[in-house]
Image (tube, rainbow, N blue to C red; front, side, top):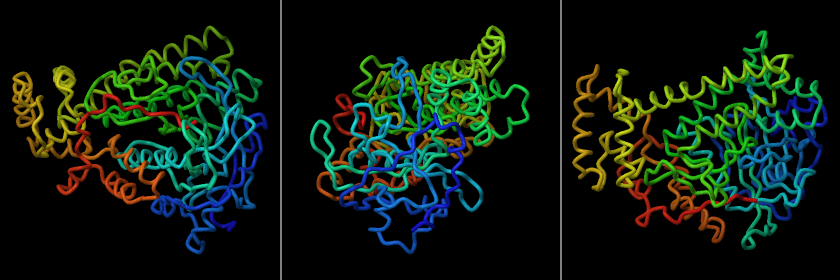
Length: 484
């Protein structure tokens, strides 16, 4: 049992203020209900000789390997713009698993009971919310977007009280680490400067070792994180993903997507789409995500300011200069992403106009974001009012001439587009159907089918039309909720 993971824990070398030692609460009758065998194989996890019952007891926290010490991590964060002390309120780090090729991954329980950071929460999670994270994180991985992943979901046999009484579950989340912008905010606001410096050095050693010889490590880390976050948000917008709760405690220093609570994928294109029930003012709307990423990076720069330069005025000027690069960098990355979605090989001056014109027409007709680009990629779809619009027909003709004239012609354009434009995303109504059947009826048929589809999102299969179609009634009244 103790050989399932290869634990070499380094986070414990940080000052003790960064964590609290805590063990998961026991689960009554754990049952393994979802297991990511491809991920287990990639991690080199030794599970072949264990029964499902033994795995369930490990994955729910009933059987802790002797080679690790379980902890809850401390962090703070700006939630909807307001700073507060937080920490792992329903998550416990089982340990850091080292793969055979030397890669390090956090193995974390989510929903495993109260911790010193739970405040008024119960520390539990529902079957539905944990299966949701399993679906979305796997979809993001196979879409080619940096993300935390889900190794397993284990039902606890315990009730969880939300809007209604639901069945409890624990998720095993795998991440490059769980260091967040909020971790640095915690150190800056509640700890000493030498502890903040210890966190900076640890983070660079773990994620940005190329910066170790840099004379100005803190400033270089800010710039490196900015590049990663720009790439991440551009990728989100490429596939129509809306995170829904981009608080600073949900911005990972590793550059991975983390925390799939009130997130969703957009069907009908609308720049200001919001699904999260708690985002009443649209702070984290689809189109606001780059703005919020920039804002979060400003919070990060404030947290590391004493380490940027000993003179505060000089430090402020340095981070202002770095953050000032964000808008132009993001626009260039976004435009290159749209060139991929449109099949453009060359970079021409009117590319931005072409892209924005299409998006404007899509919003006018509430055209499906994913399917419109599938249509342009040569996949036959049911008629849309967009396709009958005279402005769209004119746009389409202009676009067609453009890709036919460029190097490689239309064939090269379609090759590029099919790598940039997924055919399948985890459509909201299909996710809800899978969760409803699995959590309330114990029927995992649709869940497993959905997983099989989203693990090959760029490969068109004519028999999977139902996974390509948006809901007939649209997503007008669709809302997502935070699992706590």
